[in-house]
Image 1: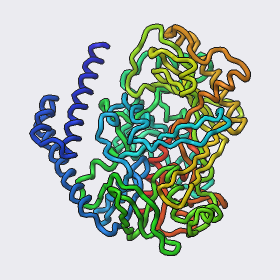
Image 2 (image 1 turned 90 degrees about the horizontal axis):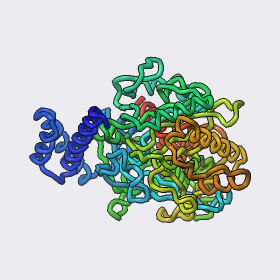
Image 3 (image 1 turned 90 degrees about the vertical axis):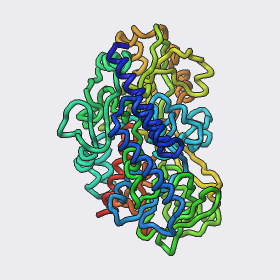
Image 4 (image 1 turned 180 degrees about the vertical axis):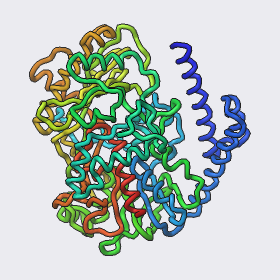
Length: 579
């Protein structure tokens, strides 16, 4: 590294040390004097350190008191602290006269593997992951696709790859059309993005915001293969842009260094941005390790929730509304086990039908990625930041109105279990992972019993539609062309996988290598047809006192990583509930 990069790394290390000490103080694991000592050693002024310590101590004491003395009822209960739920809880709690309970099944996000961007993948398969798997799928050689989802404060935003991808203009205009509500169109959503963002990149007053609470930047000092990928994209006719989320996502696509939710070398989850700064307030209670069992119903109205807290059942009432923000797998599960879903299926499990909504659990969508096209480095290069510092959006067919492909360059070898065994890439490799982000394939989520402890069955149905397979095969060839071209070829010792396969061999590779982008969505879609679950105001059809705010309400999955879109859903829900 250069001297400047060395200094930057040292600054990030100092910031990380202070954040770890502040987290420990907030959890009551260290005393104030220990924090002050760590902060001073990192160069933090006495005044700033004292302010940080004061907040951490107050927040810890406040949440301990509120959690120990739970009320029988709150104005609003928000179920799930992920990329939508945290936003809803914050917007509700901004009114000091409103009491908010934010429930999370997982535990603390104050752990190094969450806070450090370079450790995101170490959370997969741990207690911070729900650990779902889809049913065996004949379209991917009968494999069960692992479907990680965040089970921790911050939800998916605490274990994801931190990419801030707003979605394409056409996505939001489609949402508005399906909802019959212009508040979801691109122009209105763009106003929300401009209001909430604190964009650190190239100035674009028409599309980007400054001074908002959501810090967004490009990765610090990307490694050399990231700009080389942009150069290689230009060589095959894909234009490059300074900003992934500017004009590029209003047209035919392009390549860019991505936007990320990283600041001073630390992950900025949605929970840490929206809720953590108000943990000292008396009107918001954050309740971790609480598993929602079902909704409490009185006729067609939701009046509260049943949960397990410390293994013991507990029922808490909502004086105004309950908001489900538990994700595209748990949200339909909770609805169905509460009697909201397809009546015939509910009756099969002996569940009393509260309201017949056949769309609950249907329309399941996900972005599918190939893991991956892999090259061995000519000379090993250590990855930086989140190890994913370049991407492009492009069309598999020029006639499409929106880009349907989004590969990511990944600075380590990225394989599925099957291709990892078959090709055994050495550690010193990089990947370019083909992906489709406008899938036609649809799946569904089904419950297997009335008891909340019974598992769901997830029929992901990835690559069921021929158009998806055709698009993904084209993307593999495009990625191989880019990865083997001059700007990137100079980094390569050899192509490890898949190589120049043809026909059925390449298709079989694709099926073995297919993995999720972890963008599960659309299982409680917004709209007005007979398969819709919520309306444009996120109210569940036929039910009072209940709204849904998470990726499950998307009529179709947004083009690109879904975190930013989920924040918009949370902001929309917050505005509707506080109007």
